[in-house]
Structures are given as C-alpha cells and as structure tokens.
Length: 274
Image (tube, rainbow, N blue to C red):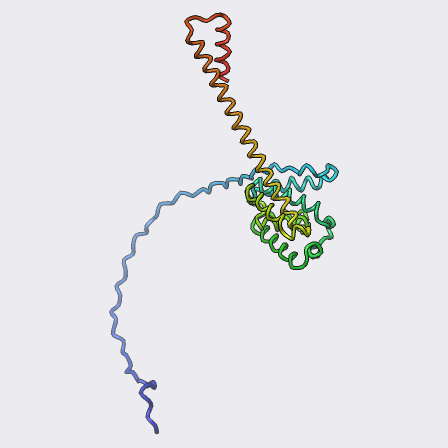
C-alpha cells in the first residue's frame, strides 16, 4: 500500500484531558443596593412653524389680451408665484419662465390641454412640431429641470400644465440656461443666432430663444438707462448745492444784510436742508 504524501493530513490521536480539581467558590457577600438620583424629565421644545417664503410678484406680459386672462389662468399664475420661491426659483427666473411660456403658447401650434390630455399626446405634439430626435431632447431637459426644483413637479401635475406643450418647451430652455444670460451675453447670443441657418429657416426653438434673450437684453438696457439718469440727477444736485453754498458764502461776507438779503439767506438755508 502506498504511503501518504508529505502534505496529506495525518490523523492525530490525542490523550484524554483530565480536568483539574477546582476549589469551591466562596459565597459573595451581598452588596448594598445603590440608589441613583432621579434625572429630571426632559421637556421637548415645541417645533417652530416653518416660515413660508414670500410669493413673487409676477406680471402677465402686457401683450396678452385681457380676454385671454381667464380666472383659471390667473389662478395658475398666482399659485406659481407662491410655489416658485419654495422650488428655488428667484423672482427674475420665475418672471422669465412666465414670459417664455407666454411666447411659446403664442408661437407653437397645439391645442390647449384638458383632463383627457396624456403625456403621450404631448410628446406626439412635440414630435409634430420639432421631429422625433429634437422632441426627445426637449422632453428630457424639461424632466431634469423639474427634478432639480422640489415642488415644481407637484404644481405641474396638479394644474395639468406638465402636459402643456408650451410649458414643456419653456422648461427645456430653462434647463439649457437661457434665462441665466447677462444682458450683454444675451445680446451677443441674439446676434449669433440671427446668423444661423436655423433662424433663416424659421426654427421655432431658435425664435423662442431670441425672444427670451432679447427681453433680457432689453431689461439690461433699461436698467443701464435708469442708472445713467440717476447719475445725471445726482450731478445736477451736486452742482445746485455748490451754487447755493457759494451764494451763502457771498452773503456771509457782508457786514450787514438788507431785508431782501436776509429773506434770501433763509431760503438758501432751507434748500440745503432738504
């Protein structure tokens, strides 16, 4: 019979182990019970009520006829003005979205949503307006924008606006960053887009972008003009103040003042104090 190899296991028989005798344990002396002092009950502080963010003051674009500003639509705008701050949308972005939706509703060809409109209906209309590939991109960007703004999706579902073509397209453009352009960059982008083939072919997305960007550029120009007007008014005020001070110094250099000069002095002092 062949012998086992060196690495094969070998059975080892161990001798039985006899346990050593263990002396009996001494009985432990009873310890006195330790009485811990009672801890005072912790009274939970009442939760502070959440402070609701102030709603934005949104304005429907002035080119929308009053006949189109139905109570139902006005209520939707009012609710959006309340939802937007909690969704992380500042006032300027919220107004930009409202303006963009209004442009899209005016420019795009589609029927208004009702209780029977489905997501598939909306996507089919997207395809009809933009083609399959572009429609898929628009839907994807709109979904990402909604997902990034907590509470916005609930509002869109509650009002049915989540299936409105103009709203979907506007949300997609917001995801692209159209509403975040500075006035200077917005004007530069308008100039660039107007040189593209898509603009010459009447691409609706490009036309909507130009509308939104032109509005941003126009607001920036208006702010610049207001700042210039304030600067001019400030300069005029400084010049007028300097003239009053010079006249007061002239009167002060006289040893005596006539009644007319004293009255003039009082008038000039009053002007400086206003």
